[in-house]
Length: 234
Image (spheres, rainbow, N blue to C red):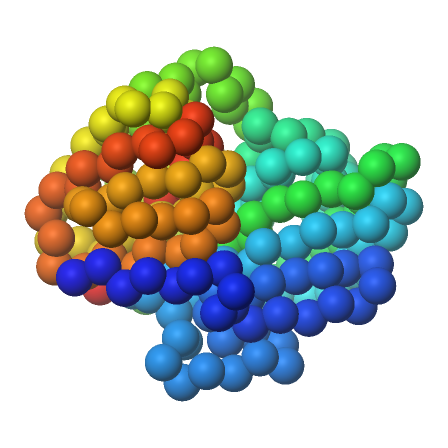
């Protein structure tokens, strides 16, 4: 089963400095049919105006992954961490027992990003909070999957999270097909750019594809495409 979530059907809010789309219920947007997908609770598609951002605010027991699509985001938190994550890079904050952070676009141009929240495994809640970031050059993802963040065995090169889930990225040239063994787990796929066919279903730029009870994905690029996929336990 693949449930297409067209971009125009997503929840939305525009605060001036922040123009955002919600794949799942969040903030003032509530849809009982879109409360999450497996352990994936939030997928926000954010455009943050230059010289603006999110002031300090707290989180606990949530794995927060930021995938920067253009521009850059600057992170500061109550542990003393500070870092700038630019387009092509990923940051992960495991909120654990509690952390306060701020995310600002200090650049002179708009920053666009995906922010994903994944619920930690029950036996991994209440851990010390942590933050990390890592570059993932798009050239190294050409025609293949790169695991960006993961709590699964064998993904030691990825940023760690406290969940039985995996966040992957890939770029596919028009006409090429990339496969992924989902093994019946839940998947949620979004093309950051380009257009795809996922097991024969057309998925346009920034649409969501919620996938369940499928063993293998066959992802054909109709245009040069940059994609993000979350593989999560049900």
